[in-house]
View 1 (tube, rainbow, N blue to C red):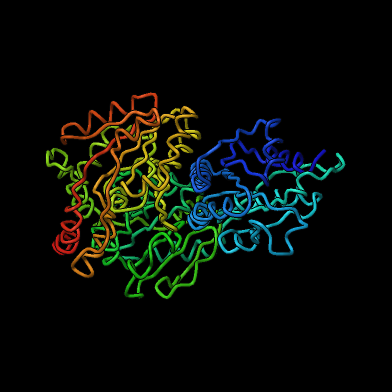
View 2 (cartoon, rainbow, N blue to C red):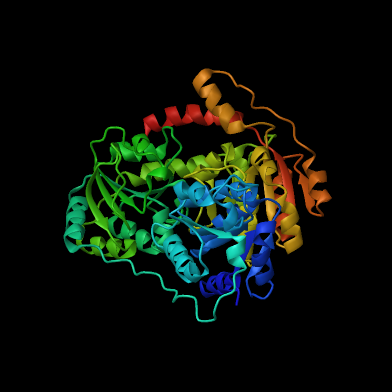
Length: 545
């Protein structure tokens, strides 16, 4: 048996379903071994797309997504997606081929020290110099990738090691994930006491709640104690929007309804929250509120995140135990803030303005999609609007990259989402800039027959950067560009292309595209003058609440 055959057996043992990647010279043995495996290899058009696919697959399923490249430029192309997964705590395993071990000690063609290169952006980075260690390295990589806080791990596989012959005695190691410990009773009691004595508590829910499968427990906790809940961008749907305690998303970096909730709160209960999701100085500038930290691990150190008490352990169990001891509140803060948010969301439902206003775009998208369908949101001005106004009733139905916040994730991410959940409709929501960063993966989607809808918010520029430039300096700088004909571009891949000519066309086009059994691309002109109106509105309307 060759070492690479044992490696593939170890991947099978971990339940790997897909590997996203590109064949190369230094992973020839791996590609050949996969022909005899039940693991499906998904050939992509760029390694960044492969990493983003593995990223989103891991985020949606809780099982490590796997991506593969060759050495050198192939491996460096993985880096953005791997860093995104690690910072957003998506379980991912990146594998790269490498030159033979007889070349690693010197300057040599395409050779980089990949083990060291990936170390700062992963939980674990290893090089296979001996075939006997393959079972241990693979098991450790998957264990760490899938153990809270989940993240990315990297394995470098030299080509001569992959081809080494070995005895049949080596076997994959037993695959089992550790059980999350129960929270300490004294911490439960302290948290319950602080919550009971609070005048205006508020909950900030992070993506850790989704990873813990604790969404229902959080909704019950908020309902039983009558405490308002705001979520980070990555935790949309963690409490259903229709739930009476839901105040929507925090993280706009501007005065919003949620900010009023934080301003009024004396106790802030952070559940499954990571600092990369929303900087604490933005929601706790005064540093004088009582913060209760409920999570898998102790809190990160931050001057604006001074935790008074931490409840560390299984999140679901922590919430249930605290709720049994804490006293309910009146919830006077919730109703006016929630009413204002709903009014704002409904305001543009019947708009016919063209180009289409962001609020109308989101209203029609939400109307066209089923509640359990999945939107994969790229990064840009549209992300801010989606985070604020796209209503979610279930977790993991609106995926937003917000820790690393890399452009280009939507199209490859949508392909991975469709592979993970073939019975759900999937929409890639993207700006024209982010779309062209990985639009080559349309060919991958067509080849795999994975029907997705790509909704392009077309403004001919880097809209979010222009928004910030005007806010800070009063004028834009080098943010405009030209686009191809997106309809013809779609058709060149064999996909369907639609162009929105009037706002009335949008909803029926979305419904038609969702019904298409293929890849459909919708080019929708967007009016980003609404960005500046939102900035002014956020600074004014909340004052009167």
